[in-house]
Amino acid sequence: MDLLRFLRDHHSDDLKDVLSRSISDLRAVNESVYAVTASTSVSNAVKSMKAALLNAVPIVHAPEVAEEDHLQLINGRHRKVIGTFSATDLKACRLLELQAWLSLSALEFTEKVSGNERETVSCTEEATMEEAIEKVVTRRVHRVWVVNHQGLLKGVVSLTDIIRSIRAALL
Image (cartoon, rainbow, N blue to C red; front, side, top):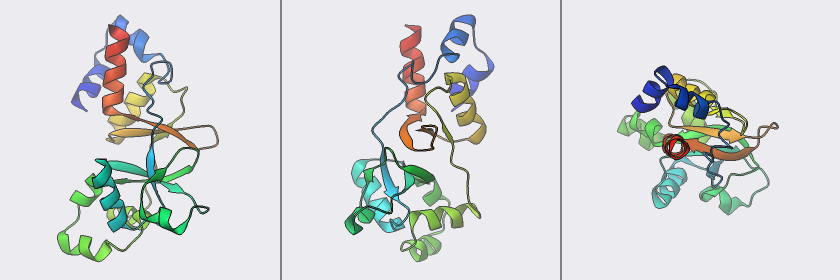
C-alpha cells in the first residue's frame, strides 16, 4: 500500500505513460476469481478460504446454484458482486462475537462488522492503472473487483497484480 501511495504521489514521465494505460492492456486483471454466495455461512466461507489460501473473496448473487454450492467457493465470473468477505473483517471481531456470528451469511456478517452496507470497490477493464491505484489507496483496500458494464464480475486486480504489471511495463 505504501509503495502504491508513493507511486501515485511521485511519478516520473516514464511511469506516467504506464499509469495512463488500461489495467487490461497492462495485463493486471486476474480472471480466476473464486467467490462465495450471499447465502454462504461465515463458517463455510472461512473454511473454504483457508483451504484455497485466500484472504478475501467476492460475495456474489447466485440464486440459481445448487444448495451444496453455498457450502464452498464457486466460480465468481459473470455474477453480480454484492460484497467482499475478507480476513481483515474477522480480525476486527472479538472472539465471542465471532462465535455467535459463524452461522450468519457472509453478507450479513460484513454488514454487522461495518455497521452498515459497504460499497464494493470495483472498476471496468478500461480503467487506467492510475484509476485503479487511486481506488486502492483512497479506499484502503487490497483488491479492486473488475466488472463489465452490467456489473458482472470479470476478475480482480490485487496490490500484487498492480506492482507486477507496472514492473513488467517498465522493463
